[in-house]
Image (cartoon, rainbow, N blue to C red; front, side, top):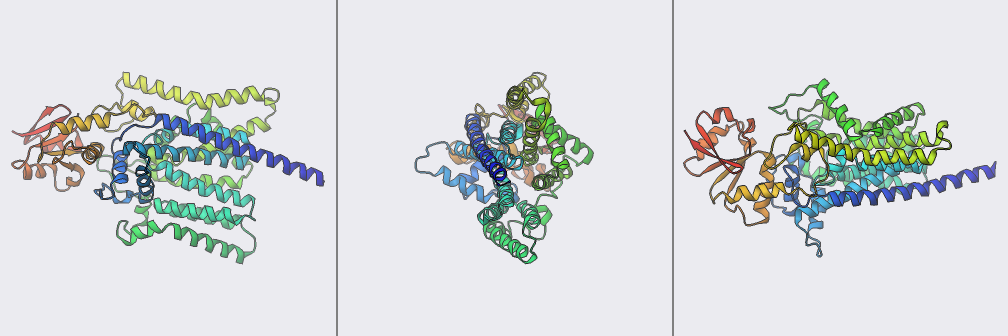
Length: 513
């Protein structure tokens, strides 16, 4: 009996070492893919916004104060200002995002391997996440999602590791630190901490007093490292009386897009399928079934945490919400790992063909999605179908931009912004929607081009009226629209009753009738 137990422990220890090696290997592979795929310059909208505020702490002209991301910007600022860093600032931020993307892949691999006690699970989970569409896309430009995933799923990982070895208090302490940092980064960290506390209590000692004391210490540590969040609430950056809004479980309504729960549920299913196109989606669903059937308790927080983002996306009136769901895909990848581990280790038909089947399945997981993304973007572009439904932008093919993850050749935001600003003189006014407003500002912040041109974010004048703003300023300055295709974002119906639009490259000059 004793020898059998020793043998079992030795096998588990050997498999744990394999899981660690597999997780490191997946981190390295993802790092190479994301670094090669990284955008060399600033992107549109949010990507440019983050780059601006990461390099310039005085650039507080936010479109939405809920998205300050002070913790990430602090790290990005340090990266930009490293003594040996001579890279273009936006490129530095892009590479930092890619780095956290690779860390996230390593963490997800480790979680799957730990839950399944299988290096096969770690490999399956890591590969499926590495090439999942939105995760790859948001690892190739300046974004904060990979950072949030590294913190949140890292916190869950250390809690799961602690549940397997309760003698190591360091593990739950690290979980608490990461949960606090996740809250410092974004208000959704409150939900993460609550989920962690539920499972901390579930997995802790049956002694009630010890459990309560452990929870108290976990909360205390989390609060200490969530200091940025509480400071922002106290300074009025986040309205303390609107917790649901802070969590973005309730968002401000979009006047151009109405929420529709059945439609958004279908869209989520389509998003999920696109991110795990091919055999991954089947194996992932199978992994969820196995986790439920075998009552794998460690999988419960992995289900509950991303479910919050599914609910947020479905009830939100924001049209382009693929980025919200990127918080869900790491969890699904874990179930891909659980599913493939079960198939390889416990299904009888695999015997004798294990190496061949494992090679075929992992190759399919790794290679089929990128091939499909490329083909789908290519066909959609040729057919001139705007599959993403996103607003148009000059020089941007929405199909390639949103459907094909790599951004290493995309300098169009820079090209457009330079071209537009060179056509203007100091004192001119350029009205733009958010997509264009931020890359235009980035050029103003990093070059001498466009100095003296006033860039105006149109959404700030919706209640007052774009027409009223133009009437107030028409006799003082030349006014232009920054767009290749004037749209409802500029309240065109009222505008065109009084003014003509004259194309000037990729901008339009406003001329009174």
